[in-house]
Length: 242
Image (cartoon, rainbow, N blue to C red; front, top):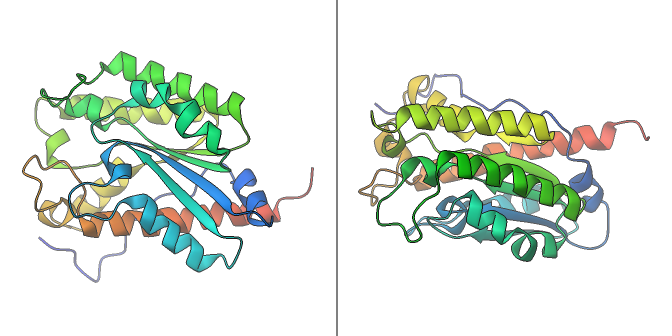
């Protein structure tokens, strides 16, 4: 079924933490820099324009200046351990004021022909914790953790329990580390179950694995992520000076 236009849209909750560092960078003369780290959601897949490019265009449209650069540091098929290993080079060295780290999908998906093989659940969780500690120690950046997509490839009987466990673990890590969570899995589940958006619309029609987000999903994710970033920036700007 397609989305019923009369359905109230399912939206993510606001971020728990204001984006203080990103808000500050928007007040300066230099371009505000965002680094997006992850796998194919960040790198792009097939003909789908990747999330960082869409988010950059939307944020630039909203904020007149300075220029906002969203730098994509995605490598398809990677998971948190390899992303952690390139954290200093690909993220911290850029000195961003905001980092978006998309994690969890490939540890659940476990595609057998991945080279190198996907990490275990425990290795992934440990790497996320390590990577967040590196970000905390390596610069002044707000952090958003983005969890996995709600798609058929991770909802099979063999994978759905692990997918739910991964979503829960990422949320717990975000709370413990005091960083924001963009709960993509729960958001997309709401689109499917509440708004009745079909998987045929949510998943890239060219993807026979039924894993990757469609053009429609990627654009909608960019829109809602933009909106909650703007809200968190506004809260930072209105907070009383320390």
